[in-house]
Length: 250
Image 1: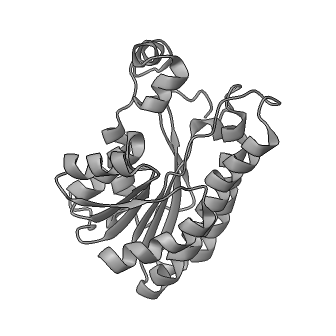
Image 2 (image 1 turned 90 degrees about the horizontal axis):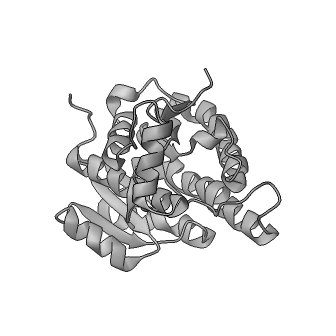
């Protein structure tokens, strides 16, 4: 299936590992020119080497709003205007309803909500000029069924979805789609850290996920690539789960 994104310019946040790296690999495999962003130059350089130079690295922290505002212009200067934006802007620390400090709340809001707002605001003018654009937000199943130990994610990712749903209706006639993917349990370093080890995370996946396993970052990347494609032009304003059947709700 020709997804129609060969030659498109994509900016993928949080792309030095985990889901972001899987997304970058999937888009690069479809022929997109992929800018990968992360806080770690060392990890970014490793991804550039692993993907055989098919991606270009930019150091950036999603919580640094000034950096978020200038990043798309840097990508444009190197690769061209951003056609596909993937807002994979971080995973806040765990905590029950009153565990996290106000500073942690503010940091999560900057990364998960304001970072998304600034990035989308920076890329939309050129997308509107060209009459084509794709914005894909990496969310969480915690917005569908709140997780007791993920209060910051539960609250702030819902705020981001509210913003993106509003935005999707405003830009749909401009040929721009805006969607969120609600992530289930994937084999990433973050999940392993939360579970204590990758072995513990895999065991939990076998016990709790109807599919009987954890998802792979490459599988997540394939869904992003489809949503970024010409074939998905009529899909916008949605929250799409990818979780092996984990969600109980209809």
